[in-house]
Amino acid sequence: MTTKAMERMQKEREYYSTIYQFLEESATGELRFNNLILKAILESYERLVSCVEEGKPFVASFYTSAPEIYAAMDLPWYCMLATPFMEGS
Image (cartoon, rainbow, N blue to C red; front, side, top):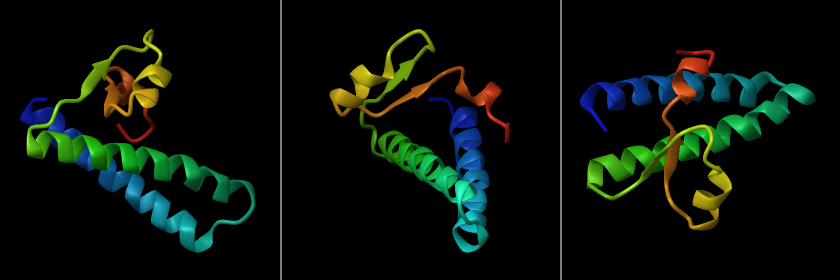
């Protein structure tokens, strides 16, 4: 992962972390359900950042590949095309 990609991922992580904290403190009902998704995204980012920092392998995938396979194999992964489609990009 390039330095620029790592910086973008860290910015996205901060962005989603802010939203997560806001919803954790103030949301109710269906909005609180979104926090489960945000928590999963943040955990995935943390895992990827730690892989990059520690030099551990991870999978860069395309949207046509099934992430269930990587999850079942307990491999850290991310979709290379996810960022352009995320709201905070």
